[in-house]
Structures are given as structure tokens and as C-alpha cells.
Image (cartoon, rainbow, N blue to C red):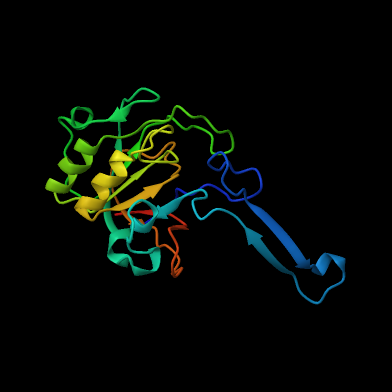
Length: 207
């Protein structure tokens, strides 16, 4: 079995949602400067890089990320490549003819090609696609873009579809070069009480 990292490296060059808190790391103590150890802290949005959204991010009174069952983020998944234009939502028609038997689905769109250079016109998910996949037994959907909704969406229709279906969201994945097929997903969020999201170290393990 092989582990495949599908998380971008986090450093000050990682792109975050415009207006959100960028990644910074402050070194308090440094061995290179003569200290007996290195000690640092960081400040960043919780929606940085590969991350899991909590219901509290898009639903009033929704569960925080610490309350989400870990079963969502660990287990068999399918990587699905879709031919979708930039700025468009993925619909059920995009997956017509594809066999999806895993309870977790990661969409490779190629519409946010560089996590260090922001582009607004990334692809997203349609609410009907979320509903359709839930009917097929899917419990988590991930995507290689910053959001499951379009950049300019205020109603967050796809997020609301996740809420009514009690499904989990992964965003900001790096799926370049990942071959379509089934894998084991490991993408556990941190146990952050009250938090609306958590960064994850998302990896695929070959079966």
C-alpha cells in the first residue's frame, strides 16, 4: 500500500479566501539563534489549504468541527475526474455513466490549479449533485477547489444541501495526477471546540 499526500504545503505563500486571515508563523525561540530548542506559533484561517468545514460554518446552531464523527473522514473513497468548465457547478450529468460505489467522493476538476495563486472562477458543486450522491449512500464529498459553492455565492446552496443531508465537506485538496479509482481516505480534522472548520492532512492510501 502507498500513501499519497493530497494536501498543499502550508506556508506564507498559500492562498486564502480574499479577506480571510493569511498563514503566518512566528518563531519565539530558535536553535539556530542559540536557544536550547525551537518554539513557534501560527496564525491563520481555519479554512486554510486542505480543510474540513463544520456545519457551524454555514448553519446557525450547527455542530462544531470537534463534534463531527471521525467516520466521515476515514475510509473507502472514489476519486472522480470531471470535465467541468471554470466557474460552473458539477451536476449529476457530469457523472452520468460513472460507477461510484464508495461512500466518499473526491472530485478532480483542475479549475484551481495552483493553491498559491488565487483564481475566483473555480468549479463547484450543484445542490442536485449533493442530493444525488447522498441517495447513493455517499457521506462525504471533497473537491480540489477552495469551496463547494461558487466564489460569489451568498446563499451557499451546495453547503445547505450538505446540511440537510448531514454530509461532510472537504475543500482545498490537491488532486493533480491522482488516477481515478478507489482508495482509502484519511483526512482527520483537529478536535477544535467551537471551531467552524479545521485544516487536515489529507492522504489517500492505495487499496
